[in-house]
Length: 305
View 1 (cartoon, rainbow, N blue to C red):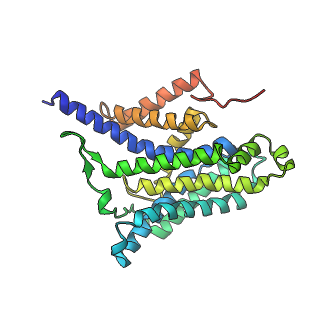
View 2 (cartoon, helix red, strand yellow):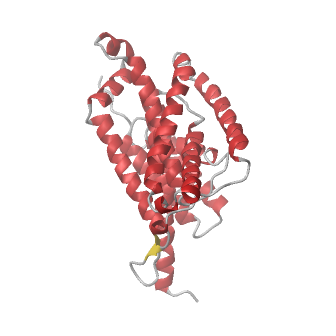
View 3 (cartoon, helix red, strand yellow):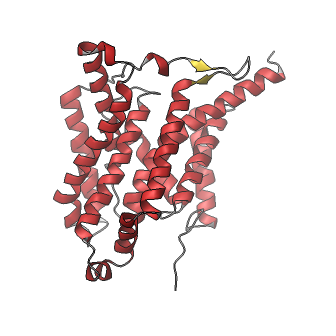
């Protein structure tokens, strides 16, 4: 029979597993909050940019293990940077070649990016194969931290939390404490007036979309610490990511954080008492109920009238 202390330890570890899911969801949602919340672009290929980051990490892991094993303990830091740059660069090209033609038809971005997601998934299958692959993690990311005798906290989860906190803080500074962030918010609120005062709105659009994709790439690098990577790995998160952004308030960074934490913890804690499918149904039902009562999300953007 499970004692009360053992039950509490299991419950606490389940809650920490929820924090790991929260980190991936938040990193994905931050990128989507920039693209969907600030730009109004429905990017159905957002999950594939996570997959780009995950495959970049896998590639660097394989190359390091084969050709530079002495660098293996440190490669993951470089993998995070390269994942961001690869997703950023492809996102930049995507905005230039596709999204820039659809700003006057926002709903068409849904179909266009959905088609792009299918094409990217097929490209992943052709390049990496249909089977899932896993990056070889550095030894220092393995194992666990034991705050008590009955609680084991994975070190890779703590590392994911550090990445998430640093990136969230960086995005906050960029959007709300920098000249570039001011230009982004001005462009999205009034494009004609922003252009009239000298802001290069085309450049702002391109860099904003690319930044959102780059953040998803970092989410992909973090994802490799908790799961294997396949051609459709990113698409498994896209519905939850949109749910997080809409539930928190499409233009609210704080809302995105609170929403990701609430959904991840609710689902993870529910899985302690029921099956994963039932936990997901319960979480989705709770979110739908709250959105019926508050359609603008948890934190609605304030608009000056």
